[in-house]
Amino acid sequence: SKPVVAIVGRPNVGKSTLFNALAGENISIIKDTPGVTRDRIYADVTWLDHAFTLIDTGGIEPDSSDIILSQMREQAQIAIDTADVIIFLVDVRQGLQDADSKVADMLRRSHKPVILVVNKVDSFQKFMADVYEFYNLGIGDPVPVSASSRLGIGDMLDEVVKHF
Ligand code: GDP
Ligand code: MG
Image (cartoon, rainbow, N blue to C red; front, side, top):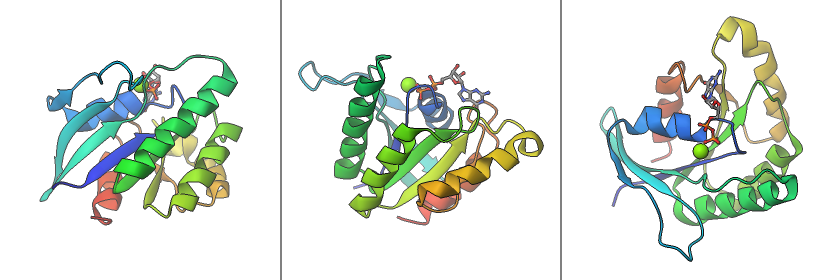
C-alpha cells in the first residue's frame, strides 16, 4: 500500500493550509466516527512518480495551553503510529515555542523520519534569518515554505519522498 505522510504541529501554524495546497481536489475522508474524538483528513497526493496518503492530524483545537499540548501529543502519537514520514510544521512568525520542543522530543524518540518544515516564510529575503533558530529542535535542517503562496513546496516534497 501507499506510504503515509502525516502533518503535525501547533494550532495555527498552517497545517490545514499546507494540507489543502497538497491535496487539491483529492480529499477523501473528512471526519472520523464519534468516539475517535478527532477529525482526521486524508488525501491522495502524487509528486513526480510517487503516490502517498497525506493526513492532517489537526482536529478540534481548544485554546487552553495545557489542552493544546496534550492534543499535540495525541496528534504526534497518531503520526508516529500510522505514518512512514512525518512533516513537523512550525511557524516562523511565532518563532520557536515550548510546545514545539516537547513534540520534537517525542518525534525524535520515535525514530521515524521527520521533515522539519517552517511555514509562513512568505519572503525568503525577509524571514530566512528567523528560520535558523529551529535548528535548536535537534531534528535536522529546517525546510522553509509558504503554504499560502506555495513557495518551497516542491523542495519540501523532494525531502519527503526521499524517505519512501
Ligand atoms: P492549522 O491550525 O495548523 O491547521 O492552521 P491553518 O491552516 O488553519 O492556518 C492558520 C492561519 O495561518 C490562517 O489564517 C492561514 O491563512 C495562515 N497561514 C497559513 N499558511 C500561511 C503562510 O504560508 N503564510 C501566512 N502569512 N499565513 C499563513
Ligand atoms: Mg487545521
